Length: 187
Image (cartoon, rainbow, N blue to C red; front, side, top):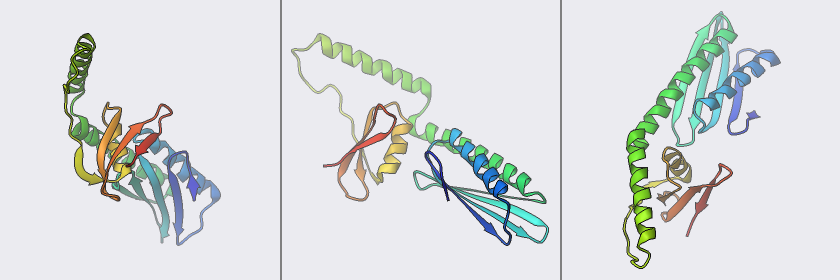
């Protein structure tokens, strides 16, 4: 098993033993998927040969328990790997766009919200004597794992996210640290 910077890559061979260079080629090609969607946890690659048919199966596990699969067959294993990786790239880009559209809405709407927030802050600074709650946000009541909350936070421009932890059943806060990692606050 190979462990990249952010994802694990596992290569399994069935009905044959390939050269080390074929495994390295599959790993090298698979590492490029992190550029298209950076929430990949692990990738399982199965290289198999049945008679003259060679196939490459890919199973990509994302951080929110989503699984993306691709299978390609060819007479040449390298070609099967290339076509499988291209198929995964398209699927990851499509999924990333879907998550982005579903989670945050259009970028134009986000810019409008940013202007509203800055207007609220400037008004608050000018009226320091008057201390009242000017805005109330509600947290997500649907229980989710911290990994899912991290994905949700990554699709927004917010600094933190309050969510109900599916494991403990308590409200938690996840935030993005300056080093790019995530912090989790539990009661």
